[in-house]
Image 1 (cartoon, rainbow, N blue to C red):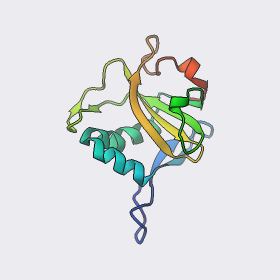
Image 2 (image 1 turned 90 degrees about the horizontal axis):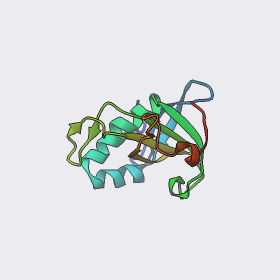
Image 3 (image 1 turned 120 degrees about the horizontal axis):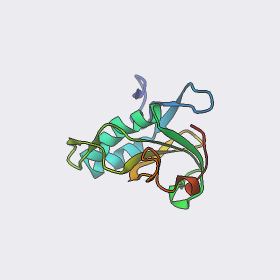
Length: 146
């Protein structure tokens, strides 16, 4: 569940989302910074809906969580990449914001850094042998933790 800034807070505060902690099995908080939200909102209504609906769903109910990013393009330029949550949500969104079935042979990835900031998310090709995991996951990540 997303939490907005507390009363009296500023609009620059991050949004906090519940996420499953693969180590404890309990809920932890992951944040999305306001500048990221604003950048996504400028792109398309579909990307804004992905942020509002799909990102929280994947953080709370992932099919897998990986730790240790091996690919530079997956790294957060402001900090060390840490975890990648992945899953196949029940819906996807077109650029105009209309719902559609999930993209075929695709999984949704949410990248979280060591400070528990979700810094990137996107659809990517799925593994041919396990369509709930991303393509090339064994080489991209150091270990699967869930």
